[in-house]
Amino acid sequence: MAELLAQGWITPSIAYAVSAIGSFLGLAFASRARRTTGFFRWQWLSLAALSIGGVAVWSMHFVAMLGYTVSGTAIRYDAVLTAISGIVPVLVMGFALHLVVRRPSTGWLLCGGVLLGVGVIAMHYTGMASMNIHGELHHDPVYVALSCAIAVVAATAALWFARHLRSPGSMTLAALVMAVAVTSVHYTGMAGVHITPTDFMHVGAPEGMRARDLLLPLMTGMFVFLLICSLFLLLGGEEEYERRGYAAPSHRAAEHTIQSADVYYVPRHGAPQAPAPEPHAPRPGDDVWTRRR
Image (cartoon, rainbow, N blue to C red; front, side, top):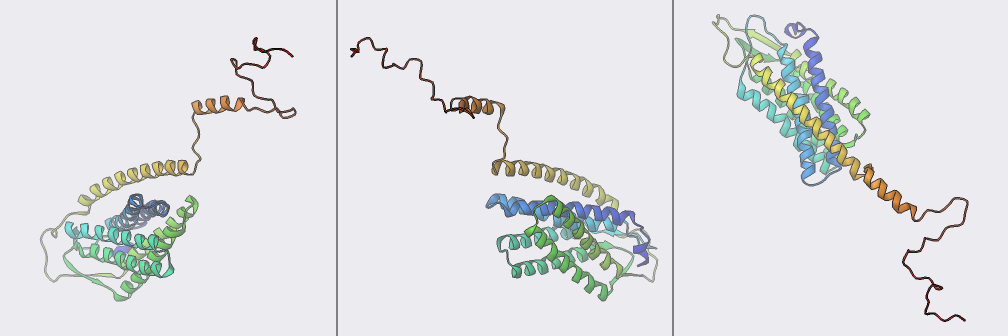
C-alpha cells in the first residue's frame, strides 16, 4: 500500500483519462455494430473490442503501472507475458460483445459480464506476473476477491451500456462511469500487493524490459489507433446520415428540381393554370385543310 500511495495523483489521472477515451470509442463502435449486419458488424465489433479491451483496460493498466515503484529494487517486465496480457482482454471483449449483440437477453448479458470480468482479472494478474523484481510478490486474497467482484459488475455494466446506449451524451457519461470501474479494479488489486525482499543482495537489475522501453511503442500505437478510430467514426457518421435520407442535395440537383417544379406551379389565390401547349402542336383552327361549318 505504501508503494501505491507514493505515486501521487498524476499517473492515476492519466490512466483514468486513457480508460475513459477507450470506453467512449468502444461504446460508439458497439452502437454502430447493433445497426449493421454481416462484415460491417464484425468490423465495428472488432474496433469496439480493441477500444475497450486494448485501450480502456490494458493501456490503462500499463499506464498506471508506470507510476508503481518498489523500494530497494528495480522493476522490469517480461515482453511475452505483457503481450499476452494485452491480447486476452481484446479477445474476451470481442466474444462478450458478440454474445450480447447477437443474443440480446438478460441471461446472455450476465454470462457475458462474468466472462468479461474473468478476462479483465486475467489481464491484470498476467500483467502482474510479467513483473520481474528482486523479491517475492504476494497478493492479499481479500483484495483479490474484491477486485474480482468489481470486475464482474463493471464488465456487466459495460456490456449493458454497449447494448442499449446510442446518444453521444449518454455514452460520454457511461464512459466516465466505466473508467471509474476499470481503474477501481486495478487499484483495488494493487492495494493487496506485498513485496517480500530476498535475504541476499542482488547485483544489477532483473531481467526484462524497462517501463520506458514499453512506453514509447504503447503511446505511439495508441495515438495512431485513436486517429484511425476517429476516421472510422466520421466516415460511419456520414454513412448513417445518408442511410437515413438526410443527405443534402447538390446545387445542380436543386436547379433541376426548381426547373421541373415550375412546370406544375399553381398560384395560391388563383385557378390552376393548364400547362402551356407545345410550340409545334397543331391547334384545331390552324388546319387550312379543315372545312369550316
